[in-house]
Amino acid sequence: MSNNLLKIEKLVTHFEITNGIFGRTTGIVHAVDDISFDINKAETLSIVGESGCGKSTTGRSILKLVPHKSGKIIFMNKDISSLSSKEMQKIRVDMQMIFQDPFSSLNPRLTIGRAVAEPLKRHNLFKGKDLKEKVNELLVRVGLLPEHVNRYPHEFSGGQRQRICIARALGPKPALIVADEAVSALDVTIQAQIINLMMDLQDEFDISFLFISHDMAVVERISHKVAVMYLGRIVEIGSRSQIFENPSHTYTKKLLNAVPIADPDFTRKSVQVLNDEVPSPVKPVGYVTPPVKMQEIEKGHFISLN
Amino acid sequence: MKYLLEANNLSVYFDSDTGVIKAVDDISFTIKYGETLALVGESGSGKSVLAMSLMRLNEITNGYIPNGSIKFNLSNNEIVDIVSLKDIRLQKIRGNEISMIFQEPMTSLNPVLTIGKQISESIELHQKLNKEDARKKTVEMLNLVRIPAPEKQYNQYPHHFSGGMRQRVMIAMALSCRPKLLIADEPTTALDVTIQSQILSLIKNLQNQLGMAILFITHDMGVVAEVADRVIVMLNGKIVEEGIPKQIFHSPVKEYTKNLINSVPKLGSMRGKSNPEKFYNI
Image (tube, rainbow over all chains, first blue to last red; front, side, top):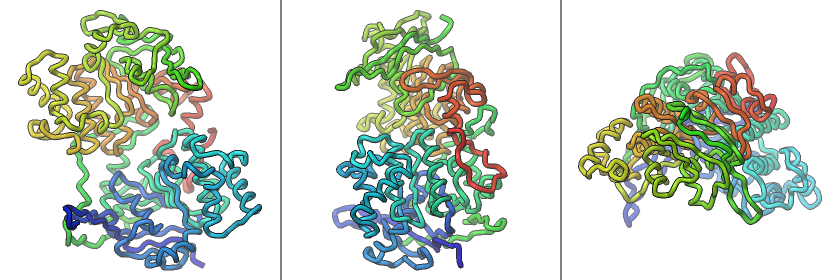
């Protein structure tokens, strides 16, 4: 029986840039430009990269929150690439998302009890007294109290709100949670607690995480596998130890070298003060990106040649 | 004076519906000439309020200093107390002897003025130069922060630049009058990590060139380890602990500091480990 949960094959997501009153397309943003990767059960794959690399768009494309242009998304052995919104409803029980900003992720007019209950009601998983009990159970599991159920989001801190979002995502017992910069906006001590919580939940419920982040140090802690993205492509992918102990693509090395180390005994190799501007992912209409060429440099460790 | 800046029993309060908020609560510290002092703390610790109080910028948001002093050694060796200084003298110090850069360069730069004009404005004001000389100095500053083709970029607007470039413009503006103290409030937090390392390098180089002290506010312990000569840890308006980086990172004394250090993921710490690992002792 396959251990594979999610399989992404040659995913492409482009956005059109339109101009003028006729809405003429003047350029295409190659946000995600031919990427492939797998996530197994109870595994965390992190996608790292700097702003504009396409990591958030990847997460959204997988959840079908934005339409992808081409490529396959195979989830729990089912090809969900061309499913309609209605058909996706059933799939979404198993696929949940946590976003970066705990402030805008929660409806300020819903009590947190109702916010956590919403996906359970939507998918008809619990009703009445059972629903109430389930909500209480979820809140306690993420470190909040059942009494909090009738409070509103603004009464909680950022870290607590993120816990509420996790409780909400956890309810439908998803096989996969896409966490898009889920801890980036949190204070470092809170961040550590939330990360511990996510890892406990993975152990307890066999949840897989697609962890999207720009923070290499956090990624090193929680990942089984890591994919490094740059300009819409995966430039390197492998196990966590392969990527961090044997980074092989020039960009990965550059990225790792730039991360400040939280240890005063460590002196970084001197960085050239260049004016490195990231080239734009915007291409003219009609531009066809050459297909990705990956080379396997050790088992399971690939780097992009183009 | 032995120190460039000496704050004693400094408090910054804000009045609110629920009473007085003691954002900074009776703290004392010093900044030595040419040193980089890192001010760390989580949200609500009071670090940004403290930074702003050094130039009395809290008054804009109805903050006030009920007691305490901030002694500062001016370039002409006169020692002034910023807390009790008349506005007209304070204005001569802001942007000139003490300068500040913020986290969001886009909101700190005036969007309707060219970047060249914004920088030369500050130079004209503080250095009493004519327009032409101020322009020349501005181009020099743009060069100093390694903005390519500075003569051309002089006429560009902030929205033409990327985040990293805007931050360089901010630095050029802040350093144009060769301040003795630069207050940098999370200057690289909004930047990509590769750009961050370039900006940190740039700030360090300029510090050495200008012999400037920096009060570096951040929540990123990695940045602290890299830039700080000394560290102050704040919590709820008070100083919890201070020391040199080695002390803070390797032998923290207070519970809060220990907790903080244990919560920070350190790149390289997972070497040789096959499975992901939780944070312990937090």
